[in-house]
Image (tube, rainbow, N blue to C red; front, side):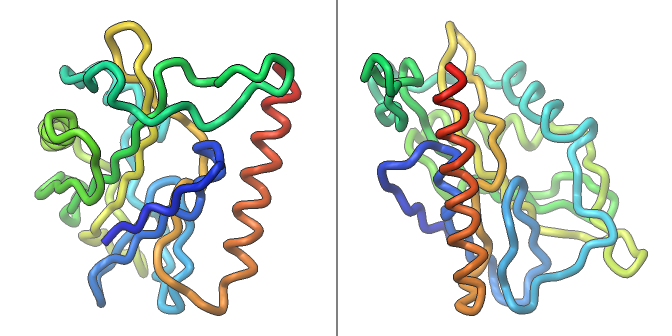
Length: 199
Protein backbone atom coordinates (compact mmCIF):
# COMPACT_ATOMS: atom_id res chain seq x y z
CA UNK A 1 0.00 0.00 0.00
CA UNK A 2 1.30 3.46 -0.91
CA UNK A 3 0.06 6.68 0.65
CA UNK A 4 1.21 9.76 -1.26
CA UNK A 5 1.54 12.75 1.05
CA UNK A 6 1.52 15.85 -1.12
CA UNK A 7 2.19 19.42 -0.15
CA UNK A 8 4.01 22.50 -1.31
CA UNK A 9 7.29 20.62 -1.47
CA UNK A 10 9.72 19.77 -4.23
CA UNK A 11 10.18 16.14 -5.27
CA UNK A 12 13.12 16.05 -2.85
CA UNK A 13 10.78 17.21 -0.11
CA UNK A 14 8.36 14.40 -0.76
CA UNK A 15 10.45 12.08 1.36
CA UNK A 16 7.28 11.20 3.20
CA UNK A 17 5.64 9.13 0.52
CA UNK A 18 4.70 6.25 2.79
CA UNK A 19 4.86 2.60 1.71
CA UNK A 20 3.40 -0.17 3.84
CA UNK A 21 4.48 -3.62 2.62
CA UNK A 22 2.46 -6.75 3.34
CA UNK A 23 2.96 -7.99 6.91
CA UNK A 24 5.86 -10.37 7.30
CA UNK A 25 7.17 -9.63 3.79
CA UNK A 26 10.89 -9.02 3.28
CA UNK A 27 10.82 -5.65 1.52
CA UNK A 28 13.24 -2.94 0.45
CA UNK A 29 12.52 0.57 -0.83
CA UNK A 30 14.89 2.11 -3.39
CA UNK A 31 16.09 5.60 -2.43
CA UNK A 32 14.11 5.48 0.77
CA UNK A 33 14.25 4.70 4.45
CA UNK A 34 12.69 1.73 6.24
CA UNK A 35 11.42 2.92 9.63
CA UNK A 36 9.57 -0.25 10.62
CA UNK A 37 10.42 -1.52 14.09
CA UNK A 38 11.12 -4.94 12.54
CA UNK A 39 13.05 -3.54 9.55
CA UNK A 40 15.37 -6.20 8.14
CA UNK A 41 19.12 -5.71 8.12
CA UNK A 42 20.51 -6.45 4.68
CA UNK A 43 24.12 -7.59 4.33
CA UNK A 44 23.63 -6.29 0.81
CA UNK A 45 20.36 -4.75 -0.45
CA UNK A 46 19.04 -5.63 -3.92
CA UNK A 47 20.73 -3.49 -6.57
CA UNK A 48 20.15 -2.88 -10.26
CA UNK A 49 23.42 -3.57 -12.16
CA UNK A 50 25.39 -0.32 -12.12
CA UNK A 51 23.20 1.25 -9.43
CA UNK A 52 20.68 4.03 -9.62
CA UNK A 53 22.24 5.94 -12.57
CA UNK A 54 22.11 2.80 -14.73
CA UNK A 55 18.57 2.04 -13.57
CA UNK A 56 17.40 5.48 -14.70
CA UNK A 57 19.36 5.19 -17.95
CA UNK A 58 17.71 1.82 -18.60
CA UNK A 59 14.24 3.25 -17.95
CA UNK A 60 14.86 6.35 -20.09
CA UNK A 61 16.12 4.26 -23.01
CA UNK A 62 13.40 1.58 -22.74
CA UNK A 63 10.18 3.50 -22.14
CA UNK A 64 7.98 4.06 -25.21
CA UNK A 65 4.93 5.73 -23.66
CA UNK A 66 4.83 9.39 -22.73
CA UNK A 67 2.25 11.19 -20.60
CA UNK A 68 -0.33 13.17 -22.59
CA UNK A 69 0.43 16.92 -22.76
CA UNK A 70 -0.84 18.71 -19.67
CA UNK A 71 -1.35 15.51 -17.68
CA UNK A 72 1.55 15.94 -15.26
CA UNK A 73 1.40 17.84 -11.99
CA UNK A 74 2.54 21.43 -12.10
CA UNK A 75 6.17 21.93 -11.16
CA UNK A 76 6.71 21.86 -7.40
CA UNK A 77 9.33 24.59 -7.08
CA UNK A 78 9.34 28.31 -7.87
CA UNK A 79 12.48 30.19 -8.93
CA UNK A 80 13.07 32.70 -6.10
CA UNK A 81 14.49 35.30 -8.50
CA UNK A 82 11.97 35.25 -11.36
CA UNK A 83 8.99 33.70 -9.57
CA UNK A 84 8.61 31.30 -12.51
CA UNK A 85 7.88 27.61 -12.03
CA UNK A 86 10.89 25.30 -12.29
CA UNK A 87 10.45 21.94 -13.97
CA UNK A 88 9.14 22.62 -17.45
CA UNK A 89 6.25 20.31 -18.29
CA UNK A 90 5.59 19.19 -14.75
CA UNK A 91 6.40 16.14 -12.72
CA UNK A 92 4.73 12.74 -12.53
CA UNK A 93 4.95 10.04 -9.90
CA UNK A 94 4.81 6.26 -10.12
CA UNK A 95 5.57 3.63 -7.50
CA UNK A 96 6.29 0.10 -8.70
CA UNK A 97 6.62 -3.07 -6.66
CA UNK A 98 9.07 -5.58 -8.08
CA UNK A 99 9.32 -9.11 -6.72
CA UNK A 100 12.83 -10.50 -7.15
CA UNK A 101 13.76 -14.14 -6.61
CA UNK A 102 16.84 -15.23 -4.68
CA UNK A 103 19.12 -14.78 -7.69
CA UNK A 104 17.77 -11.31 -8.57
CA UNK A 105 15.41 -12.16 -11.44
CA UNK A 106 12.23 -10.11 -11.81
CA UNK A 107 9.36 -12.53 -11.25
CA UNK A 108 6.48 -10.11 -10.73
CA UNK A 109 5.80 -6.39 -11.12
CA UNK A 110 2.83 -4.22 -10.18
CA UNK A 111 1.99 -0.53 -10.11
CA UNK A 112 1.32 0.49 -6.52
CA UNK A 113 0.67 4.14 -7.37
CA UNK A 114 0.30 5.64 -10.80
CA UNK A 115 -1.49 8.47 -12.52
CA UNK A 116 -1.56 7.49 -16.20
CA UNK A 117 -2.64 3.90 -16.99
CA UNK A 118 -0.84 3.69 -20.38
CA UNK A 119 2.38 4.92 -18.79
CA UNK A 120 2.02 2.53 -15.83
CA UNK A 121 1.56 -0.38 -18.26
CA UNK A 122 4.74 0.63 -20.11
CA UNK A 123 6.67 0.85 -16.82
CA UNK A 124 5.54 -2.69 -16.01
CA UNK A 125 6.55 -3.95 -19.49
CA UNK A 126 10.01 -2.39 -19.17
CA UNK A 127 10.56 -3.76 -15.65
CA UNK A 128 9.59 -7.29 -16.74
CA UNK A 129 12.37 -7.10 -19.35
CA UNK A 130 15.03 -5.82 -16.93
CA UNK A 131 18.32 -7.63 -16.56
CA UNK A 132 18.81 -9.57 -13.34
CA UNK A 133 19.50 -7.49 -10.25
CA UNK A 134 22.24 -8.14 -7.75
CA UNK A 135 20.22 -10.14 -5.21
CA UNK A 136 19.38 -9.16 -1.65
CA UNK A 137 21.64 -10.82 0.91
CA UNK A 138 20.39 -11.37 4.47
CA UNK A 139 22.49 -13.31 7.00
CA UNK A 140 24.93 -14.17 4.18
CA UNK A 141 22.13 -15.85 2.16
CA UNK A 142 20.83 -14.58 -1.20
CA UNK A 143 17.14 -13.97 -0.58
CA UNK A 144 13.95 -13.21 -2.50
CA UNK A 145 12.64 -9.71 -1.78
CA UNK A 146 9.85 -7.29 -2.68
CA UNK A 147 11.44 -4.07 -3.98
CA UNK A 148 9.53 -0.79 -4.06
CA UNK A 149 10.69 1.66 -6.70
CA UNK A 150 9.30 5.22 -6.33
CA UNK A 151 9.87 7.25 -9.50
CA UNK A 152 9.56 10.98 -10.07
CA UNK A 153 9.77 11.83 -13.76
CA UNK A 154 9.37 14.60 -16.28
CA UNK A 155 9.43 14.84 -20.07
CA UNK A 156 12.37 16.19 -22.04
CA UNK A 157 11.76 16.20 -25.78
CA UNK A 158 10.29 12.78 -26.53
CA UNK A 159 11.81 10.95 -23.54
CA UNK A 160 11.07 10.48 -19.87
CA UNK A 161 13.76 11.78 -17.53
CA UNK A 162 14.00 10.84 -13.88
CA UNK A 163 14.64 12.86 -10.78
CA UNK A 164 17.71 11.41 -9.05
CA UNK A 165 17.09 12.90 -5.61
CA UNK A 166 17.22 10.49 -2.71
CA UNK A 167 14.98 9.69 0.25
CA UNK A 168 11.76 9.74 -1.74
CA UNK A 169 9.86 7.26 0.38
CA UNK A 170 9.50 5.98 3.90
CA UNK A 171 8.49 2.38 4.48
CA UNK A 172 6.33 1.63 7.49
CA UNK A 173 4.53 3.72 10.05
CA UNK A 174 7.15 3.64 12.82
CA UNK A 175 5.59 5.93 15.46
CA UNK A 176 8.78 6.11 17.50
CA UNK A 177 10.68 7.26 14.40
CA UNK A 178 8.87 10.59 14.07
CA UNK A 179 12.14 12.47 14.67
CA UNK A 180 13.77 10.61 11.78
CA UNK A 181 10.92 11.49 9.47
CA UNK A 182 11.08 15.16 10.45
CA UNK A 183 14.84 15.06 9.90
CA UNK A 184 14.36 13.58 6.42
CA UNK A 185 11.96 16.34 5.41
CA UNK A 186 14.26 19.03 6.85
CA UNK A 187 17.24 17.59 4.97
CA UNK A 188 15.27 17.47 1.73
CA UNK A 189 14.09 21.06 2.14
CA UNK A 190 17.65 22.22 2.86
CA UNK A 191 18.81 20.48 -0.32
CA UNK A 192 16.08 22.25 -2.33
CA UNK A 193 17.00 25.67 -0.92
CA UNK A 194 20.68 25.04 -1.72
CA UNK A 195 19.77 23.98 -5.26
CA UNK A 196 17.62 27.08 -5.81
CA UNK A 197 20.34 29.38 -4.46
CA UNK A 198 22.90 27.87 -6.86
CA UNK A 199 20.76 28.67 -9.91
